[in-house]
Amino acid sequence: MGNESVLCPVCQGVLPASGKESYTALRGRLIVTNGYCAGGCAERRAEMEQQQAQRQAQQQTQQMARPQGLPSPAPVPGPAQGGRAALRVVR
Ligand SMILES: [Zn+2]
Image 1 (cartoon, rainbow, N blue to C red):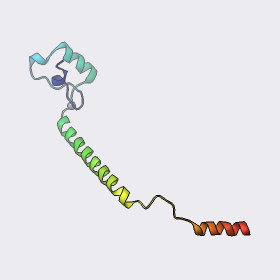
Image 2: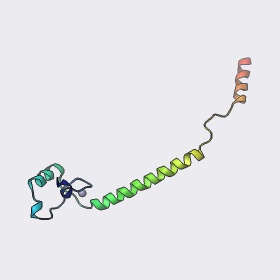
Image 3: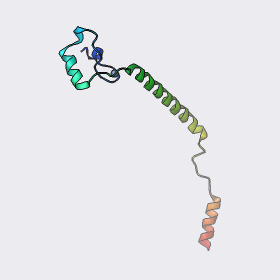
Image 4: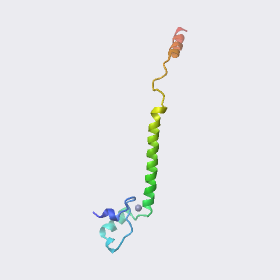
């Protein structure tokens, strides 16, 4: 309880104390386990979300394009191959 206001939601580091009330035993323990937030996480998270959104958009466009770009999965019917095979068998 209360960890969310103390911890950085991005890096899970301890955010700088906002006041004397922030210096608690729990906070001290979290500093030991998680370390401090280096800062700039909000910007970093925004960049990550942008990259994720771009990747998702690219994946969606690729998935949309695939069925149209793919030729029919059935192999080309091979009377010619069959004929060659038959010729080889004859020889
Ligand atoms: Zn952080």
